[in-house]
Image (cartoon, rainbow, N blue to C red; front, top):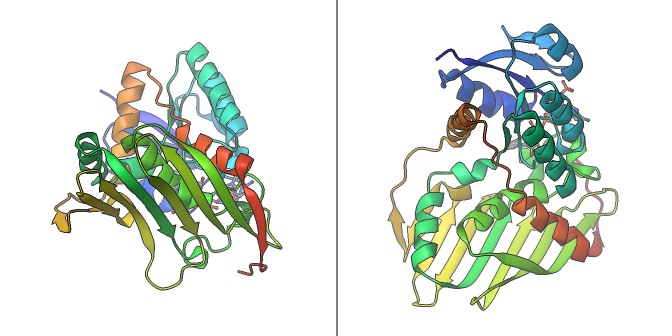
Length: 308
Ligand code: NAP
């Protein structure tokens, strides 16, 4: 079967780090064009807007939208209405309702919409889910603490309304939790906003999970030194699980469970090829809904200004 021509909108860090190598490794796709206001990729047909791209390259079948979330909806809508299959980077939008609206358009257009959650493709997530399925949990502790200066240098959008702040990485933890745990919902949220920013630098969340004594999340962007992307659980029978490095490593009862290599975006593009072949959708807004709930219920606490 001929490779599907795909275009990328919004050439930035994640495109260069992950999308370009994943596409190069997948014979189901050919990276045919980009649309980005200031950036381009060597050897790839460049445009500066989705509209110009769609006019010039009617042969493009699929569009990967990798911009910040605040501008994602309009680009995705334009591509869907032009009959293109669409992949959305995480989070799939700035609001839950706009993602629902995109799903309706994709459905009526008969094309595929894929709202990706890359952390769900981390190697140890499947084994962690199997453990949860056979071990009713009594305690869940999510700890996602990283250094914003190291991972998001110069990204002004991430601090603006809709940029999610510390929930930009935190939603990755929630994407794993919503996949592997039974349904849970937010009961409390403290959001820590630097005095000079529109998005939180830290968040402490509490959840209700049926049958569990506690479920908490601690997201923080002020962690220097070792970085922590852990989900720790205790089961009612005393067994313990620790999913670490964002889902790359797993320990059960203190013993390491060997995992394959990290190839989250390889998995994402394999899934996108399957969805295109069947014209199916994969749109799960639950991680974004948890973030929205954290803002709805959040106590806003002002902390010292943040400077890059
Ligand atoms: P980035 O480096 O800032 O790149 C985003 C690109 O989008 C920019 O280079 C910009 O290119 C384009 N863009 C279009 N409209 C924009 C606007 N209004 N403001 C700013 N940029 C705009 O960001 P990124 O790290 O690649 O993240 C993009 C998305 O991927 C985010 O949703 C993020 O959560 C997700 N993601 C990032 C990572 C990571 O490690 N960085 C990992 C997984 C997922 P032009 O100026 O050329 O238009």
